[in-house]
Image 1 (cartoon, helix red, strand yellow):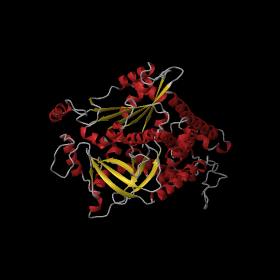
Image 2 (image 1 turned 180 degrees about the vertical axis):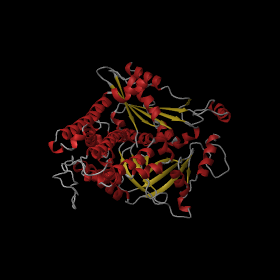
Image 3 (image 1 turned 90 degrees about the horizontal axis):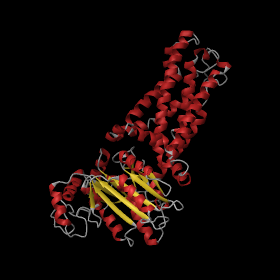
Image 4 (image 1 turned 180 degrees about the horizontal axis):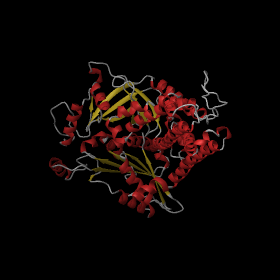
Length: 564
């Protein structure tokens, strides 16, 4: 297990190159900061502190570097524009992962920088290098005040960004992360403390930058790293302006297993299948924006979002639009009992397992809530038409990116324009049977429209333990039926967890033997299989390992995971 983690994180070619450049550049800046401090004759008095000041100065330069890097992956609109052009050079789809790597680096170098300065301040007082005490430097000068302020904000941001905390209380993560504004104000003003100077007395001035540059000999890193902050600020202003353009909620559909579908109309909103956006409902929260995958196709006259009610924000949204958790529970209970298309049902909830309720929004006593959307933003699944074989894997609600993609494929098939794509393998792993109702009608349409039965192959796995009622329902309805009793598709449901290693092994062998794609799978005609996954990280690591293991000279398995 540990060996697999080491190979995945450090030894794969792209990660290896990244690690060499990322950690190598950090060590370079640390060494440069150390060297410039130790060899500066004007700072001879400060260099009496020796290693503590050299270490703190080297770490400080690294933190300036990280202060500029950490905002780059958050420039979402710029990344969206650059992504199609540079995706082969660096993993543009892993911007959140890169953001975390920089954050980890900042945590480490902050500890080094802070420890070095604590030793510095004590030694300054002990050696009488300055006419001031360690307590004065800590709590009365700009460097010490902003330093402790930055550490406090980092403590709040890092603890609430922890995965389990973020899952349990997204609001805490959201609001504390917006303390980043104050963090960068503190970072840019940290050097005004003028600790690094060639005089014994402070060298403050009454005008910007509030210190005398003739005597304050810091690196002035803020003059360089402030530009990503300026660009980020301008992008946020643009996103706010764009989000305020007229947007209307046109329909609300309620699906089984706690999923509701919002259909939105926003003139001029253009996107590519598989992309995602941010949604805000001011009546629920004036400040929170939540990411959701677009489940409609660009050809549709609306933008659809499938939202599962799993948290406070989504449940409040459901209650606001008339799809309360009680309505969801009633529909889910109906689906669990497995009523079929022709079943009779007396009640307010449509009995068909793959059907949905369209709420009558015009009959609501109150006005529809105002909604705002920001986006769209790029995702790996945009590239699905660039590969000969596309493997689409969704786990639970993680199937949402592929709803729009499958629909878009269906539209493009009708136009006779599917690019390099020759085969599609669609896997959907669900924990509970009612979830199949989310996209059942869509899958039925796509499945029925296939002129070539080999072009699209659907594999659906149910991982929950089947109870007695469901077992009897399957036994009664499966015998002689032309459709699966759970999904109402021609494709039969498989039970248990998929064996991904076996699946990719069989796929590779079929390609190599020419059974899967005639004329492909040879050393001279290498076949590229693009795997696109959306779901839990643990499952993603298993699938990625299978892709790496079965890649050879004839077949190349590429892996990409959705990140928000």
